[in-house]
Length: 295
Image 1 (cartoon, rainbow, N blue to C red):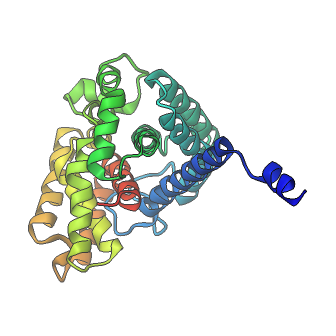
Image 2 (tube, rainbow, N blue to C red; image 1 turned 180 degrees about the vertical axis):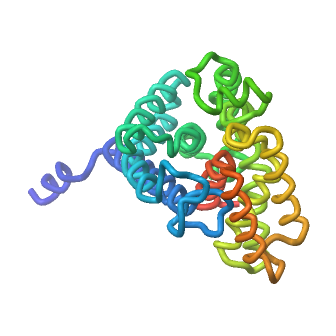
């Protein structure tokens, strides 16, 4: 009789597999939210909202970002699951649209994480697809999964008509690239600029705060940020790239006076109302990859 009872109480293999998938998706969702939190609390972070101040923004605070993160928890879980099922791009896009609506309800209409919803969401889907295939979670493999699974649709998405957001107006006025263009190429700045900068600083024996600062400045120096173009036009974009490149050229956080220089850059950006929000979104994505990947 005891053997019969044990037979009936042993979980079926498909139930074990489902529980394992659910646990994996929950872990990735937690790490995605933690990555957004890591970006929020980082300081000094030129022009951007932190726990210290509101940067160049008058319409949002750290509390606004926290409400947004809380609203996005289920999204990251769902899109990881969708990636594990190799869902088509239109299904992922629908999840993103719904997540953006929840974000806007939570923030009373303020756009805190639109770029992050797209970028981190697609990375969660690619991570889920990678896991379901049994492949090792390396950055290169996640990138390949992203492009192989949805690369064609991402490319089409980058030129599709969209609502007239600030980013869209900046693209039209200044031919600036943004989250859509990054996404069309599988977020190369995350994989080839932000994540390597973060890892180099950690490999040199510095702390995670310094690594994230270096990654942020490397991204600011490299990308064409529609958030900056919207606020400062071409001159503002040139200022951001020039100051970021000077910070990097001086050795970044390896320089003894790095924090004073980063604070000075922050003051300059606030005075000019510049906010490199695109770089901040990509930093959050790099933080997620750093937490998830094994290479």
